[in-house]
Every structure is written in C-alpha cells, then in structure tokens.
Image (cartoon, rainbow, N blue to C red; front, side, top):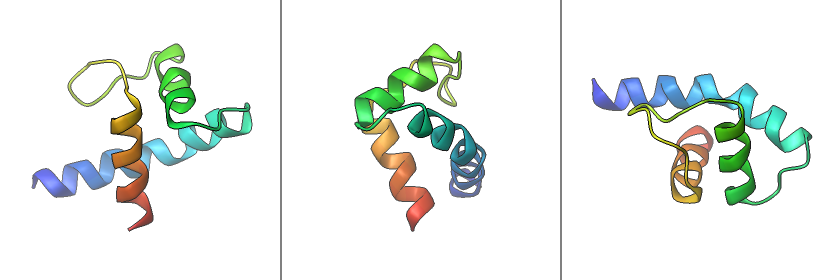
Length: 62
C-alpha cells in the first residue's frame, strides 16, 4: 500500500515538475525550490530537498 501511494504521489507531481523545469529549473535543488515556492510540500508536509526530488524522478522513470 505504501509503494502504491508513493507511486501515485509521484505521478501527481509529474506535470508540476514539468512546469518547474519549463520555467528554467535545471538542477535538483532548483526543482525542489520551485516546488517549495509553489507551496507544494512533501507527503509529510515538509519542504522539498534535492534528494527527495531525485527519488521522485527515479520513481517516475522506473
């Protein structure tokens, strides 16, 4: 169930991450900052970090 929820959350973030990238974010840190600036928090309600973005991207590309 936990993996299913994580996959669903990652899928929900795909269009938002694409928006952030289209706005000029290239690095993982910039993508995390873009999500944070949009008020989008992690599933636990915390700010995004580069490592978490890396994990999300790995999950959606798998």
